[in-house]
Image (cartoon, rainbow, N blue to C red):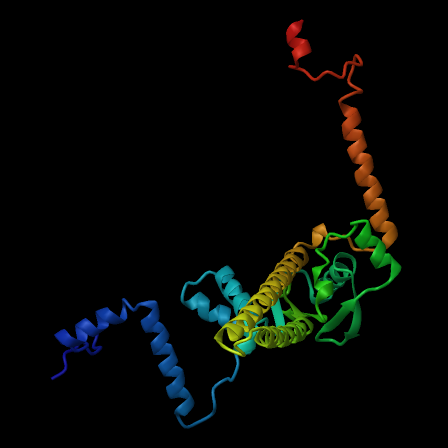
Length: 318
């Protein structure tokens, strides 16, 4: 017989020891356990008959879920940006590991709206890296070497703040992916297929040279073609091929460093001038030289006309 409270409501049945232990465990779920439970619940929901659940979640729904779990909103935004940072890169093949990948990619976050970030990217690529647009659509921009006189002058006079190493790539592709209202994801990809083809050609040439060395030593050796001739050819191939691979690896490292530098610069738009024209660069150079000259004169034009700094040997002698 069910027991009731004084107000007539039914009194719940006492929990058994097993049920009590389960209840306590549910109050102390680890993050991994909660994750597995939610994944399983979603799987059961998808398989259950009836209307399909929502295929996607927007940021508002994610923030509401996080708020129910007492997770800071800033952590949700950071996790969202990290997820948007994920770039689909094909699994590296043998040539990618041995020589260099056909493309090298870098990505990061930049403050501002999509239009503002795209303007910053354009400014850096043009004035900093010496590139010009080859193709553009709403989703991406393809860049190639800028061979104009203005780009040449900036490079020779060292008026640009970029490394200029991205000019050695076959092409550079930039894209801005919307993330939040005031922060966007920037992806910069360098097409390194030109260096890859060059390395393959040089390696093939090393093989030809090695075979020629083996043939020459075999012709010179009175004993005919033997193990020593093969060893000479192999040594030639290993030496030349090793030099090619080391050179390509160093070049790829410079490209990665240049991409990282570009991402850092784009993420700090206040350090990039909006106009990267040659007159602006010349004015900046003149200003820097004038400031340096003024700094040098500041030690001479002190009151009294004495250019000897305080605490010098002359002051101590007095």
